Length: 331
Length: 284
Image (cartoon, rainbow over all chains, first blue to last red; front, side, top):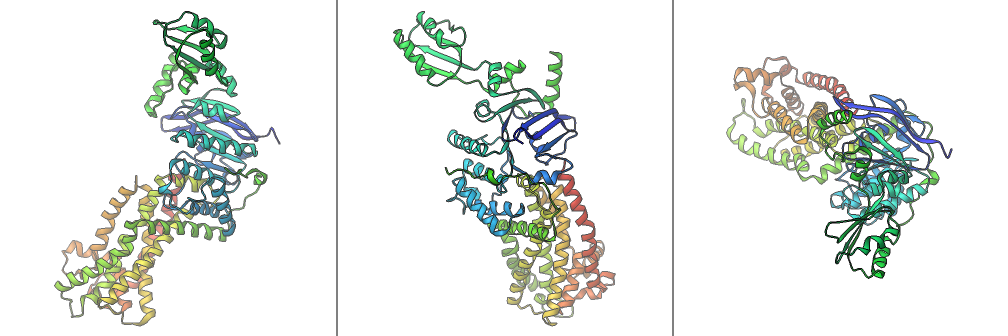
């Protein structure tokens, strides 16, 4: 049971007119693990989630969720999944509590059970005080938490979170991560889509990178970062100093590049705890004054550049899809 | 943050029965309740079934009533209330189009669709909401009517029968509006198109003035307009003046039969059509 696949897709293809939104996607998520689906806007992440949650039908390929076919056994799939979609799928004009009760009732809970479950979830998601307020007055973070709670009303074994932190401020984002981690320690299987590499890195057991409807890379976060080349250190010195590059070398993961003016140093690093501190201390011991130290985590753009040789296309433009494909083939 | 207690009971559900009658009723009730909360929270929608009926009724009776002489005597208030019900109920049917279009263009419809609920409940809940708002609207028009001098003459049962003719028609019409809501791009266009269809339907009828002096083309439209049949049927059941009795067109000679027939025809056409359009719009 432990290694049984809770989400399994083969060759999922979805076309909207001439646009290919998904182009033969395979996925496999073992029970109790998190799959991070990483990709830019318009890569096909949402389309994949919509098919897996029975909201859209694939043109080709098939998928099973919790062991049931998403097309032929949609009703059974729906009984076993919780969904938090990208657009808020909660009711703006109801209170938080009314939303959860309604969803409970529509999921088949009795009136009392639905109320009890709503209060329980409001408590767990720190929305108890806001539960009686209409959603229009909720912050973005509160709304996302409610949306996530809405997906958990029936305690489903499989969860889909479509970009759960897009648009959230950093504090709400970290809080959402905490919640997601807690969910998974409890044995839920989770598919999470994101545009942020650090989010996938932070939460996922396995990552698939999608672009133009296709999986262009997959593996553990470590595999992926190995491909991308990890983090980058940037140090700005108070004055040029030839010793600096030599002093830094033991801390870096490759050669140290020095800028023309001799003040800026750049090198690949393996990011770890206290790296910036070590850099400052090392340079300080060598008698070098540091103005600035930055450790850059690789961004989604870096990943795309490393994997495809072109930056991620952030556009949703449908026309671009086909022309980019042509370019890729030409390359 | 307290620990999220999820998993112990997170078991795979291995069988599912199609929703039984009780589940269907309960799903429709949940959604109807939700729609009513919306109306209560949206001042504009609420005024459509509360303030507007009061205002229209009072204005028409006092402004038109002062200028219109009824054939064969009788007060305009006696004549007008059935027409006011027709006008208000016909235009308020737009609530279904606007509400449904709002739902379909927002994220909430995806939530509903990912739940193990009875799928047609979204549509049936809308139509039930419309029926309930029609009841509210009726109460406001009739209440205002009683204040300005309207009196049904044939007793409580006939009066209720008169209301019922309107409710059936209003319910049937809401399915037509559901189709409009599903095919329109957004709530604004649903409202715009709805107004263009429903307003002439309500006005080019015997609801506000007798049809006898309308230009020929408008007159025949008015005489065969379902709104006219419903209004004439209600006037007959209320025992109020009904000049349409003198019109030779079949629906005006048999308004009760005609109004029931019209309502059934609308239902038979639009209810299945709405389900079809809804399914087409929400799968793919």
